[in-house]
Length: 137
Image (cartoon, rainbow, N blue to C red; front, side):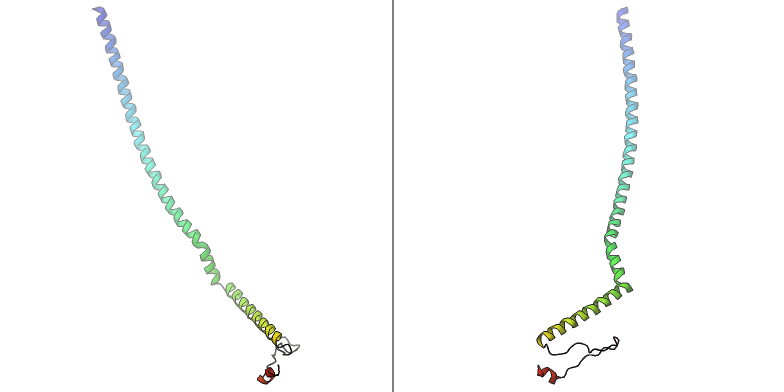
């Protein structure tokens, strides 16, 4: 009987040990559960920040895309652009005049369509032709 009593004491001690281990495991599970909960909350906050950042990046991308157009519109409204445009128009007009004169001279080589030789560059005169002069050629 003493043996049985000893074995029962050993079994009771082991049962108490199992209870202690089980309680420790439960405490650890509770702690892990709390940690998981707080990590989920942190994850949720980070995802919200990520979405907000993505929205900001999207807005910035739109602005970056619009920036060259805004710069172009600003330049087109500037005096510098108007001056360049006027200069180009004058140059194009003068090229057209000279090309037209070259074609006419090609058809009528004796016809004097160019400026008279005058020393004053500011006062340029054209040789105007009458219908009678054109009929000669």
